[in-house]
Image 1 (tube, one colour):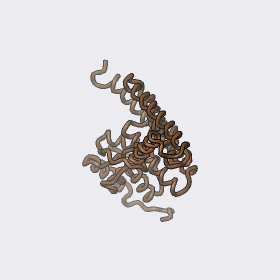
Image 2: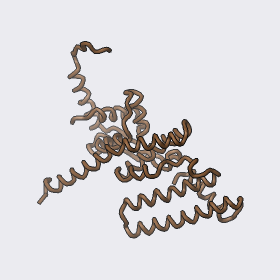
Image 3: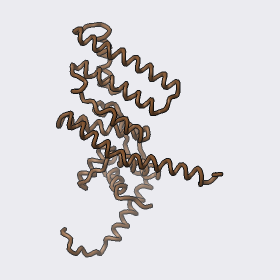
Image 4: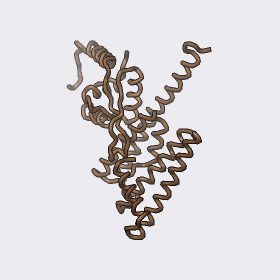
Length: 106
Length: 162
């Protein structure tokens, strides 16, 4: 199953932040490590799509005063999701193996 | 309604009923209590009449706005100085996301808004809230359209289609 770059980032963030992966923490984690922050809408739209495919599972968490009484939605990666992520990362790894980076500043 | 707002709401109710504060505060509290009670009745009626979800969501946001108003009034702050995120932006997101997703998404935006109100000032926090909302509308709209298209394709071309 092909994954987009954002989907890869999201799955990696959900895996890395376990068990505290929810909207804000995922966005901040991706921004911290990649320098680019995905919009709230794209995060939820992609996670909705990933949940539909069975790659992540969500559960409603606690509501706090600072969230205006709105509950969090925590995400966990499923075994199917881990398998898809691994395959996707291995494909990139295979494609980039042995490349000579000419003229690119490292 | 959050726990803090609920406490403030009860406090406003007590002020309105007992009249233990200064007249201006009693008047404000009474006004909010009356409007809130009327709004809740309207919401219940809308629920019984099975009005569209969009209408009920708008009504809910309107009622919550009054709860925030109570919180501000009881704290002795005006509504504008209290950390209330822009309601129209919230409504726009509610329209495009699934129910669970909408609640979590608005909660996330509120969390950052509260943090930014303390960190910067309310005006900047409102601008950032709007910017995040507008950036989110595109992906959510595409997702909503995609869902409709998939449903239609399954309906007309999927197994069991006429």
